[in-house]
Image: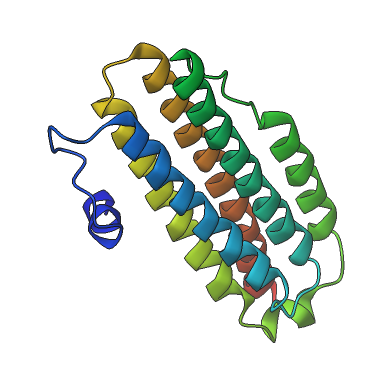
Amino acid sequence: MEDDLAKELDVDVSSPNFHVSNAIDIAMRVEQAGRDFYAENAGKVVNQNIKPFLEFLSREEDRHIRMLENARKSLEESEKWVEPLDNRADTEKMLSELHAFKGRDAEKEIRNSGDLSIIVTAMELERRFMDFYSRFAGRIDDEEGKRFFGALSVWERTHLELLQSIQETYDDFRMES
């Protein structure tokens, strides 16, 4: 799966010419694609209870882009990595919102929408991004760089977990009907 993403992005992370600046550039492309996917699909969902989650994920990808821009600037100016951000509190808040959503009468919207395919596609994107960042972390010699890309991988995993919870909500409604 991670090799598929590398091929799509036309990069060879195993190349001896692969450098951390390449990783940051590629990561920015990945995050921009994720942000655009979430922003576009937030406007397409039938179930308006799902829209805030997609908007949240679009904002999260924007935060990643800013963090990557800051990392690039810091590396260029001082050869130091920036401290990766922690998104656990924001994701926990969204998970609590999901629990409130589960209590709403949304069964009709869920059964009559194609929104689940958006969630499944988003889960696949997050899984691929998570694996790709993990692979970057494994290829970078610098310990701070490993930690930075490891943190991005963990961040993507929290997004995946949120999306899996949304999918479970759909599954619960389908099983009850």
